[in-house]
Image (cartoon, rainbow, N blue to C red):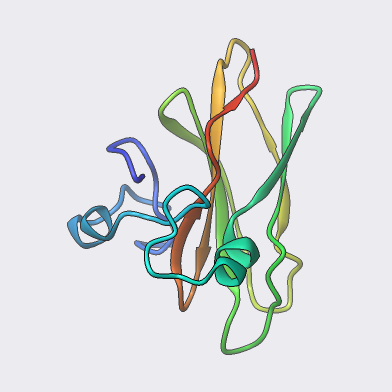
Length: 125
């Protein structure tokens, strides 16, 4: 589910485009869990609330020094537009701006141990 325009917070602090390795890995979702148990997917897939031009992105994942959500970001109409990085002491939630005229968003989360997880497309039009 990582498109060409999707940024990958794992590549660098500057949030560069995904490496070929991450593109090949893809990402997980409720619809495409891979070999992950359902409980693991539910902890990693972001929950999104859209209101007033903003997407509130929350990940129900614990945060520990050795296991945390590194970042969340949103793709708007196929292009990554907003992200927030975390350290293990943060709460994995962010309020991200949705550009005017957007039709749909997909939210992503990046776990330091368990790769990238995505929501289904969410209509915001």
